Image (cartoon, rainbow, N blue to C red):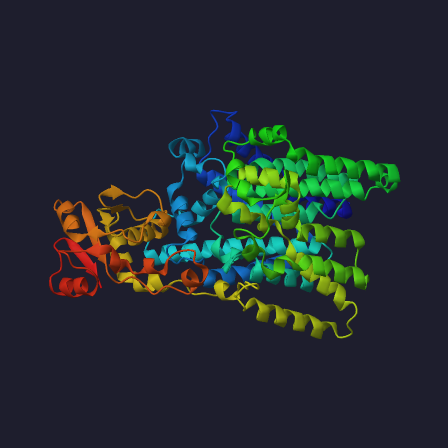
Length: 591
């Protein structure tokens, strides 16, 4: 009786997780197709469901390793809380924070009707989860408390995603310490260029979506028994609408992984061992994945599945020979700098494992190779390339590299090598030390992310503290009128209403701020005669980090906010000196 009771109790997390995913999937499906017009939950409700779904997934899949999971979560929550997200203007996390402020406790359908940017692929679940943390009080807060909540949120996301990475390693058969090693490998090398995915994108909807994708892959990709196949397909179909309304990139990842998983399972089945079946399977695969995409009819059918077809504008990215296209050129755009040296290691790891052939499972080894080279499969399999170039605009094609699981291949390879080593503890310590040393090299082709992960980006917050505190006190009385960079930083991080050039800023898009944008202080004074605005002349700026200079993602000159202003024909140092002696009426100057 006690034994049966224990079995029932052990299944509670899985049952709770399944019910939550069923509800979350139904809400997502309804959001996509508006089946139940009368049902429109608030973003607070959606956010709570999102947190419950993520946490229950970790507990349901990791109940055998619960102590390790809790320990990892606490450690990385503290690391995430201490480092915080990357918040140097003009970075994407500020834009993500702004979107979070905008959806505070609104109906998700009303929100979609008001602003279609919050429709498909723009993070309904993720931003709602963020809003639950950042808007948990009545907003009678200080800038310091808002920053603290931002750090708490980053810590929560980092802790959860590292737990999912750990479970991913465990599902491959790695022992605890090598599963942890795989977590560090991902953290120290996953991202694009010098940007750490775990520091830069934690507030983007891709963060929770890729966590869902990793958990599904870990649970099902290495299993091919009949029960796992049916359960994996069912869960994949339930997760698909969730990913579509959160961040469709990972929905595409899931579709690719499910397809390859089914093909791999078929190739390992007993029926496949017969030669006629092997030949039929090989011919069918070649026809579907390599020949059909060459036909215009198939290309039109794929284009008809999406709202906007990017295929015609992506033709320059095709790898072709005469009229036959083989996929996407893997050397163009930002693909090499996203894959980096770590992205090509799975092939070498596979060869090493095959050579050692000890303490390894051949099926796991082959599937790890498949997961490790997924970006190359996406590039060089025409059918997958066709879908990717149809749904993805040119600047984002490189994101296919995010489908790689290179860290699993590296950890599994070293784990296999350990079987030949007598002093295993020394070998593990040596590998971990070497990993951190390599991760400290941020130049091409290594692209280590250690420097970025530990980078302090709060200098502007410290330097602007008097400006921020005063602006926050005025937020309920007057709109802030300042230069575009200062205004957007105040709006994005602290949700302070702002104006620029007489217009209310409703979105944070730093790419629109041209370098020759100017703010005439005389016009600011004239517009503020009625006291409608709190005019802020920010001549202080801030000292940028090495990131804009070395990555080229934005111009470091943007941090020099003084260059925006002009007054009576004066600019630069001349303006600074003049305003110190003759401060403009109704405007606060920060030097």
